[in-house]
Image (cartoon, rainbow, N blue to C red):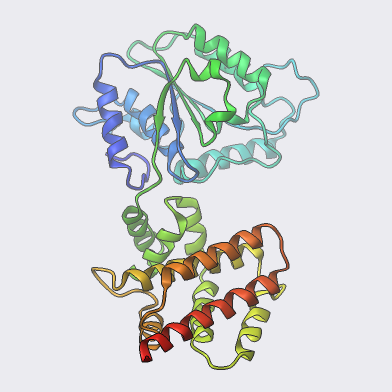
Length: 376
Ligand SMILES: [Zn+2]
């Protein structure tokens, strides 16, 4: 079963089961994959599998070990993550030195949040690095003996956040790992990890979350209607954090704006382009939102190109039908190229109003020209 709310990734879960049952289970594993694909969630799930005492499929979700892992409170679970530096000395082996009671409260609630939603990074205020003191403390802890039958599980989240000294300390442990200990390192940036560490790990690439799984998650979790969840899942490209961020934004400015863009493409009045550009470059609109709107426009144009999606309505069915009726030979693929070019230009910090004005004139022109072709 899924001990944590893991979205999709059934193939990878199967792989973990095979790994658990294989005779050659290594002691160091690196889980890598794009942001928001579920590396930590899967690492924690795997850690729980290693100590589940239930019968049958592991983790069973019922045994005491599963309950403790579910809360990230099992004594054999060692979580390593970035901590703020509150101590004056770098030679400490107590990563919590200098922590006040309120810092400890922050820490406990960050871990509790991680247990509830392992897709959100475990982020403490002012914490940018995994500290060498955390690795020294780990060294002290994991060489202590534990009850027979228990596997010590070390989950290092965002492993790339270590500095050289911390990596070296970790390397020493991985070179002579204590008995019955499994290390699971997660990172979206394996190129920032020394090869000496990488060469000691079994390497697993976790794919982005499948669009259909992400859509289902948004429908359930945020009670979104199917067509809307479909668009957001596509927009997020398999990144659950991005998807949840979009879903939590109930204003849906992007949808309003998309509708206006299509209206302008079909409008006879030049002036409408200027009004639209003014709206899009309004100071209250974040640059990120503008990029999101253009990404939405690309999805819309792809739907124009491909036609009606199987199994239901599109969120912009009406707009799509209107564009196709107005301009039956509209070259949607070329339109996508133009929008992508404009997105690139915005990334290069060109003058936004000019780039957008040009884009919308081009799209409008394309819609009109293909209309003419049709009439001839
Ligand atoms: Zn269990």
